[in-house]
Image (cartoon, rainbow, N blue to C red; front, side, top):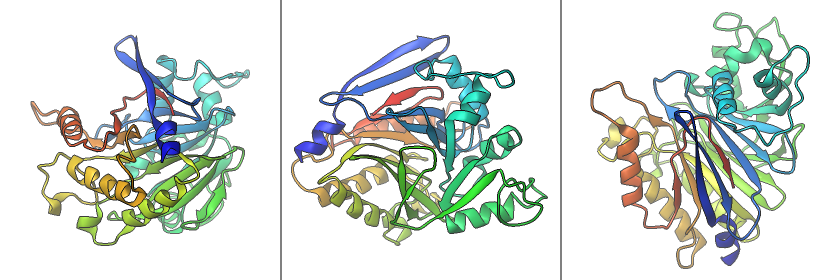
Length: 339
């Protein structure tokens, strides 16, 4: 397991301050980074303007794929302010500014984990000025998006299937679970897996050459959901890391450990996340096989309650429960991360 450990171990985490926000970059120790992730939205729940959305690209190309799209244009604008795209060659035309150019020319598709509004709202509201590209999702997810939003009532149908009139801006691609699919206009491919949630959710294993990155949509733990869906992903990844490099993952932790299991509604706590990752480690085998693995925590639920800071509490509980030697990253909107 020397291969995975050397590939995921971090050299440094540099924090640069721009105005009141933090811009974070990181690099791996023994090998050059392979992926860039820009945090368009880091939170779950009720705070509009900062909902689940990330951009990912291989550092060998200037084109991104969006990992969910709860917040899109506002996330791009916040990331521009913090310098997240400063290393990207952006050619602005006469019509579109920097944010428009990034959205229209550099975001080549959407990987949508599920149809809940806090994961697709940004794409919907940006669609009138977006460019043609593809939406990739499991079949049930695409069907629900078409029936619920792209129906001519909740929103115009900007896709190429479903209820007419079809505006044909977005090409809808149904992903087959466990089968790799190329992402058009990028050098990336994606393999989707089903996750347990009140509606079907998804995990995406994105690959470029021998490098992998995993994005998890909302998911409940196997111990509660009783469907074994996370176990299937851990089994698959444990086989893959024998000959490929797992550069990192984004996975949710929505609630504190005190949250009762019957009120999780298909989400994770720090303790439940560590239990799942321990299962993953056991499948790989060896001594501390996940030491140094980059784990980005998403979807921490925002709260309007007085004197309540779920982010601080969840961060504390994750660090206290981190017996696997993980490199836990609590992202903030506008940050750029290198893996």
